[in-house]
Image 1 (cartoon, rainbow, N blue to C red):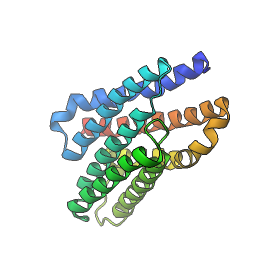
Image 2 (cartoon, one colour):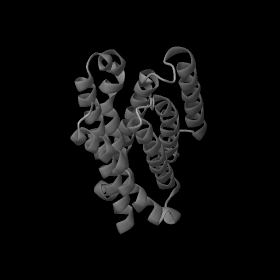
Image 3 (spheres, one colour):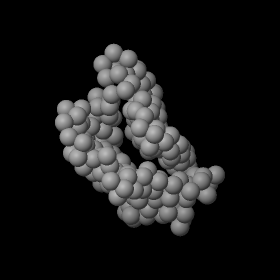
Image 4 (spheres, helix red, strand yellow):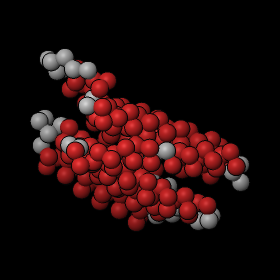
Length: 215
């Protein structure tokens, strides 16, 4: 069983999302569309995280929740990038990408990696797409002719949060189904690393939203 310290760490990684979420809810009415989508993203994390933690605490399989969460997460993040890249990429391409991904998730959960199994294939594909989107954002800001203070840009911090989180999680999502069944201790080490990445992500999103609050 997980130690009390390990449980606290995992619960903390789930609970820290409320820091950027509360900040977002305070200013959500004045937000641009992309930041409103980030607010929706944070809200979905919080709600699903609470339910997932409840199932885990009661020794119930919470992996079906992860399948649903993956679809919600991908949709909100892609809509976020849709607004970021509105001058460069047609909106219809994002909607097609979202539709294809959701269909893939449902087919995977029905026929390949059942609802009670960790959905490594969709999580890996999601990581690749989000990493590519975040790198494209970095590429576009390096091509801007006007000088901007990117450290004061909410989008820069949020994009960096996604880049770090999905880059660090890529290997975990890729190999988790093959290594996790063999050792509970290694299982906990892997998920503690994932929890650490989640904490970093939420802190960076908080910093980004705080920059907007200062503006």
